[in-house]
Length: 80
Image (cartoon, rainbow, N blue to C red; front, side):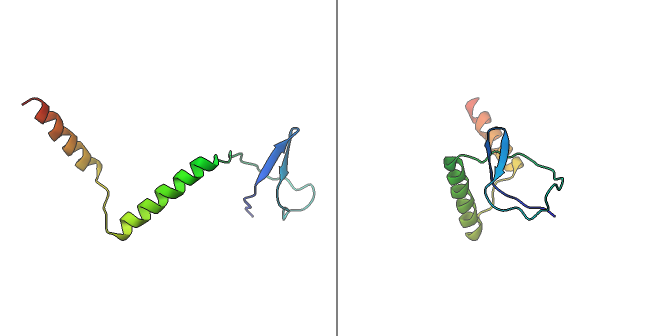
């Protein structure tokens, strides 16, 4: 079973912020993932919303080849 929970680290101990659905003395594996700052979360939410709106309008991101071709054309124009 997998559970994702929030916890706080205090005085050398991880303290869950909500009840856990496990038995006493159960062995578990813990993966530590720092919670991102609120500003980072807000940024990611904005980017996600922009991408959703772009897809809804039929926007297709340029491929790597498209970008490389554009950049090469720009570089070529500098030499003229």
